[in-house]
Image 1 (cartoon, rainbow over the protein chains, first blue to last red):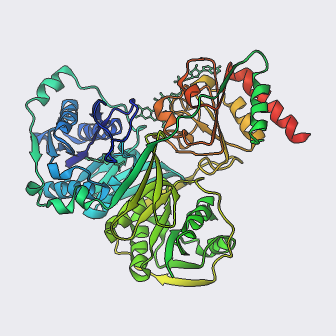
Image 2 (image 1 turned 135 degrees about the vertical axis):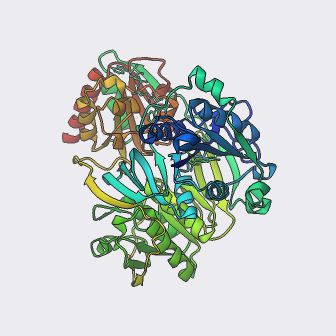
Image 3 (image 1 turned 90 degrees about the vertical axis):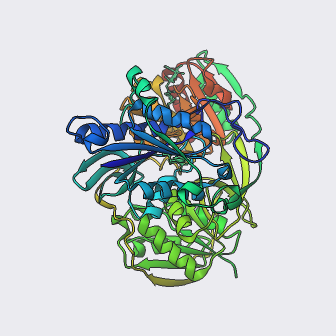
Length: 268
Length: 315
Ligand SMILES: Cc1cc2nc3c(=O)[nH]c(=O)nc-3n(C[C@H](O)[C@H](O)[C@H](O)COP(=O)(O)OP(=O)(O)OC[C@H]3O[C@@H](n4cnc5c(N)ncnc54)[C@H](O)[C@@H]3O)c2cc1C
Ligand SMILES: Nc1ncnc2c1ncn2[C@@H]1O[C@H](COP(=O)(O)O)[C@@H](O)[C@H]1O
């Protein structure tokens, strides 16, 4: 089985974020990390291989490989290295000056082209990138590739050519199934991502991390990047901070004070 | 006349409030055409009679429930091609966003998600970074595909559809994923989390006892939510988690009890109109976003508030 995991480097989700004057996320001064939601996808890939590989190990000899794929600036290679140190086999970074300002349509086009090229059976994603927060890339990849779409999976199992997932939706618990190839996004409840071991970190330094330009993947600049972005930010303003409200300490009347506040605001 | 497509959103045979909100935004732009992609069409149609909708289109020929989002986006794409609307509006649920994403790819158009306001020139307002920044943007290519966050507008009453069309459609089957079983969520008598005007949420501070949270919610006619610490502990269903990896809610009133207010929790509730917090720790970050905070024990404050609300209602 050839597995691809799409991972993004994002500003640390624990940090406050703001917009730069060009209408893009201000990335300077915020630590960049591997999107924490993508770690669950990496862990899913590793545990699937551990279940299905005869030796419990991944890599060429086992018949199973895990490739991590990202689109982003050169430093996104740090996020890929982290994925390699967790146990993925190799990595592909699509990075090109012309990619700055790409929207979800362009991002999905680029990722789809790399995935098509590699002929993966299973594509794993997180449910959202903590900066863009669109949750659309996995569905867009399925559409572009013609792969089955199985999103928001809380459980994933593979038997032969068949994949089954279980997920929690607005409608309750759903079991879904499809023949491979498939695009699967996983929720954060699915597992507990492992920490890279010392051995894993050392080994990752020798693993292949291939950087590709747009030309390498057969796309041109006017198909992607901000010149081809199909939505544009007109302006952005920090929302006026919520004026620090009233804070009372409960002296036996806290609940009554709360009710008085709700009544004053006409909420009850 | 300019027309706008909206995708009718429904759950278990009931048209959701989100649909009326989509119609309201759509009517700012032109004539609203409501598309029903559901095997329950006959059940849903009459429910649109007081919405700001001019026409309905029922897509016949596919059993949508059995497929994932592929068939829906393909059907919408075919209608876009036929009717050339000015925009397509879809509810910003997890499923709605996926349909929108696939549709945007199919019709080669720009997409905006989680929009909270839309003007007659199709300039959209979004609230990003957990509500700390407001962005105005527009689609500059193709037929704008826009998903609208629930509770962003007061839905208007309209005359309901004047005409109806059946749209025969055969799905090319590009998405081969199938639903094999569905166990409906167990529903209490409470309103749906993302639609509710009031949400009362409990966190780790409840120590697994949600009774005081539920009692206040019921007195207020509110939905109950939970922090991830509470859903991880198994105290409350994951489907009711509020936050970055749970639901995004934007009610008139949000009450957080025993919730510290971690950035991932705030990302899902910070755009609520009024926020109230009850927490033992005066330094809890939830107080930074609260309009009214009570530093105290939720097991004392909530029952007293519940009694107060009940007393007011009966007087
Ligand atoms: C990738 C990722 C995604 C996440 N997604 C989400 C998400 O979607 N939603 C979410 O909520 N979190 C999410 N989190 C987790 C988040 O970081 C916090 O850990 C979580 O929100 C904490 O929940 P809590 O406030 O209930 O618990 P705690 O942080 O433990 O806070 C409990 C609070 O209760 C107070 N308290 C205790 N006893 C009482 C009492 N008797 N009366 C009053 N107050 C009391 C304490 O003072 C404390 O402030 C995510 C984290 C990660 C890494
Ligand atoms: N630039 C990117 N490179 C690689 N994967 C990405 C990128 N952007 C998004 N993804 C994947 O798509 C998922 C959903 O992202 P989004 O639709 O941006 O919220 C993420 O969790 C990643 O798995």
